[in-house]
Length: 217
Image (cartoon, rainbow, N blue to C red; front, side, top):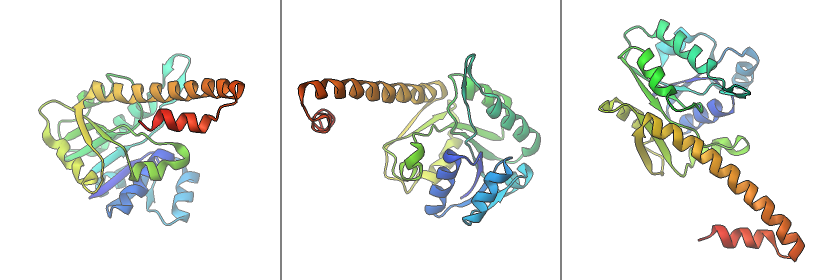
């Protein structure tokens, strides 16, 4: 399958390189020339031309930043990509796969905005920046948020057909909430074990043994 990566930071790079390892054809797109140069230096195919990317690929993985602000989550990068994509895609049949973390309702908004020949899917990433490629290539689960009665998402299954992980197919909002709930659960777990470490130090217990005993059930 020919895959276009839109946004080539750590999520986009791990997604693209992981797909390359599964023998897909991948082209990386970004507006950051310095970032593209680094990718070129390690032998990856890149472009700063969205039209070229659209001509090349049949599935597009959107991995642009969605930073948190005082007002909430900044979705301007995702919306800007959708705007440019709509103006360039024409009548090409393809999949527009959002991997960026977005607030509930965003994928539905993007789906309504893009033309009907574009199948929109929310496929959240569960990647640690330090181990992103390993996490992508060996996921514990794959979540797909899809539009009801739109079975074109099955095209995306070709990307994941060689992955050994359960695939959960749900609606847009459920998938978006799975991503946020996962982030919150991870933060809670880290905070819990940080507090438990303090208790272990006071009681002269081994936190690693406690962690193992708790998490190995």
